[in-house]
Length: 252
Length: 106
Length: 145
Picture (cartoon, rainbow over the protein chains, first blue to last red):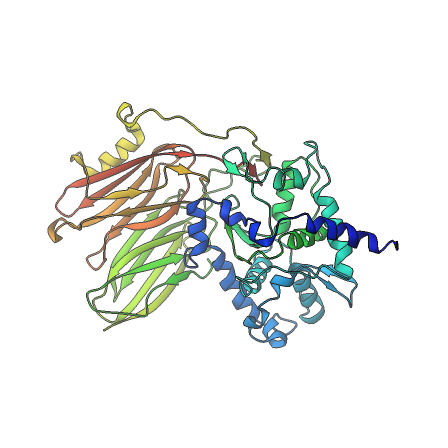
């Protein structure tokens, strides 16, 4: 067997071991009625403060370059984009999440500085782009170059980490649906980011949530820019394949 | 302060009661938290909201630090005449954010 | 505060029954300042808030008036108190003559399990109240506070 085929095979086995989309539980289903009500009503969902900011930023020209809209047209043209990210960029030979994709646009096309993943303007843009895919199935490419990225993420998901020596899978698969303190352990899907967490009292990215898990098990968290983070994001997307995009989700 | 999100009907029938729902981006720093070095983070909240309709005050609220971040509020107004609804949020620093909408009364 | 993980039962506190409890002095004084000592009656307003709160950072609260009193007794203001918050005042709301139904909905912060009290001041000088005892549990895995 060629070496390159191995991650693909591992991935195929891993993804086939997972339940079908219909049986996957979005974190929405594990949230309480109040949290669900906040997400159900756009006028009550604080995430829409960022969506509106992002829609305005989409139209605004940064000092040194064109607005997003100058190249991409109306933001409605972004429908489906968030549903297929992370994706592989063949020109650069790397996988990108939306945050990285936006920063490439900023630095290469807009003569603007890259934004941190938790910067309000970045969250606003990813929320505004993400909401265009709301209701669509999250379905990223899992073949070609993405296979190796996802396989790396799968390996990380199943690796015990930190002083508590816990893997992602031990909580979010083996114990999903059980309780930790007063809260139900969700399956850990990535279909609602950026999401408004009551705990954060603000909108935040998937890497922020992953870092909280890592510090929770007393592991050294990867920075948002780390390839490990992107690999895990890609695996989570593939693992949650078929779940509807809920951006901007609301969670406890 | 950032621009608020306001849900308000465009037109209503005279005498009807309609809801106004507002959200505004604000951390509502309570004054109860401490930073990593133990220093108290000073309170900085939106402390006041006023809604006028045709120049007359219809609803006013005093907020305390117990109001959650990104304050959300729903209240109702009785449709009397076509006119401007003007809403003003004011924070501890004295900065204000305004938002207005015309309501058509038929 | 640093991030932390709470494995055990978080903050489920048992509360004594309402009849055994008295309003905390600080809140009682605030209500007295409002009413000028006039009696507080049960009724007219209804305080809606979940009895079990999964996250104290944003709790939906609403005050409704099931039956609007006659114009001479219209509700002028509604005041909400959270007895065991560091500052028990939550919101004071004032209703002009053009307001529709008196009442409001908002989202509030609760430091711990406690009693919430709503007081309404009516144009006829009467004061009405409703209260709710609730439990606040903490999320298990917390990010930076």
